[in-house]
Image (cartoon, rainbow, N blue to C red; front, top):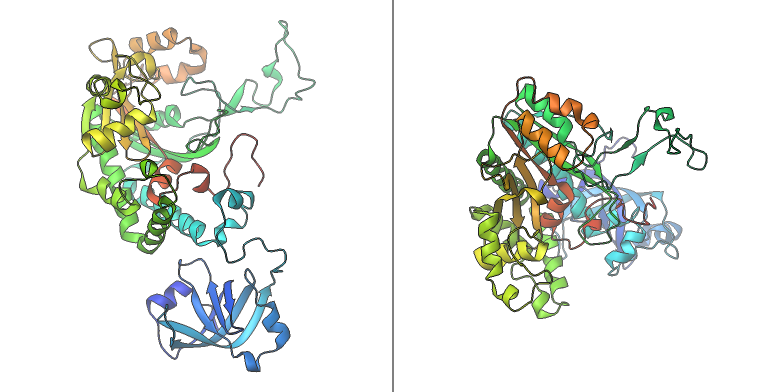
Amino acid sequence: MKDLKRTKIKELLEAPIIGKRVNVKGWVRTFRNNQFIALNDGSTINNMQCVVDFENTDEKTLKRITTGACLSLTGDLAESKGKGQSVEVIVEHIEILGDADPEKYPLQPKKHSLEFLREIAHLRVRTNTFGAIYRVRHAMIFAVHQFFTERGFFNVHTPIITGSDAEGAGEMFRVTTLDPLNAPKDDEGNVNYKEDFFGKETNLTVSGQLEVETACMALSEVYTFGPTFRAENSNTSRHLAEFWMIEPEMAFYDINDNMDLAEEFLKYLVNYALDNCAEDLAFLNQRALDDEKNKPQQERNEMSLLDRLKFIVENDFERITYTEAIDILRNSKPNKKKKFQYLIEGWGSDLQSEHERFLVEKHFQKPVILYNYPKDIKAFYMRLNEDGKTVAAMDVLFPGIGEIIGGSQREERYDNLRQRIEEMNIPEKDLWWYLELRKFGSAPHSGFGLGFERMIQFITGMTNIRDVIPFPRTPDNAEF
């Protein structure tokens, strides 16, 4: 029995050989009538039905076959007589690799709320929903690297511990080895970071963008894909304190090239999911449709999950300036009737998710790229336009989610960048190296950032971002 190598359930279902002797291993989803085991090994959303000869099986062994238990089963693959599956394993030998006490195992075969499953994040991947999400997430990680590799980009690892604040937002996690209750002080009574591990104040990165720009100034087209951290005390369905960012940076790209790449990239990812994750997406689509039935009519999505995904790949993205968007929003019915939570008063307003969704879902009914934003609501590194009021920034807006990508053409002119750093009161000493990039062989360049979890949220149809990352990090929550 020991010599037979395990075959994954996915392989057996995709290319079954009737009569073949097989070994399958996995976790019990259900055990019916002391006879039918639904076994899942994570390779596919589908279970393998394994039929036990209960009359000739030790009763003690049968009692140990419970939901959550881990088994190794050996037998012959046969055509299934029952409905719901094409093949099944006629079990001849049972080995119980790990028991699961039914009195204590929290994932019994019934519907569990997502809130409850977050409390047992170490076990929730054993549900159909989270198994599907993990598999889709893997497929998207692979697709990201494949997309950029096919286009001659180079992947660059940027630091997780950094001395700079790329966004200028200041909401960062501090990294220190100093004793918080007994930290050394300088002459002015402030914490003396010169005595800290790095000899200066350091934080967890909020973005790899500034560092990856250094690589684009030598390798032309590069990207980084790594963890980022924001110490925002934000308990919403769209924010995490730890998440993953994909940040390409391209020399010789202007804002239009940047928009072209962003649209191509998003369509590629969605197409890849549709082509390679069909069974998981079909399950998640049905799950979302069932959830929608419990919502009030006005809160329901007009499109199913699969329709939203096709909506991305089948439509050219509408490109409009921020100024055009403000005019549309100011004259819109929701604004005039004061239905927006944040009313659009005029030019210079920072757009909220409700405005972005209105443009995509109601006005244009296609994905939208907004560009040329007021400089005062954007970061210091974005290229100043000829009008002196706007910067060459762009945001890609999706249905149901609002902004999914933010990017810009970067400011490659030394004097302009230095002036913006001064205007925004950013210490020049922290960015001396970033300024030097503009001194030695500066070139026009652009880039953008895609929050990976936002993308996974969109592709899986999950309404809370905490459900698309294995272990969500949010205020008051770092349990696992």
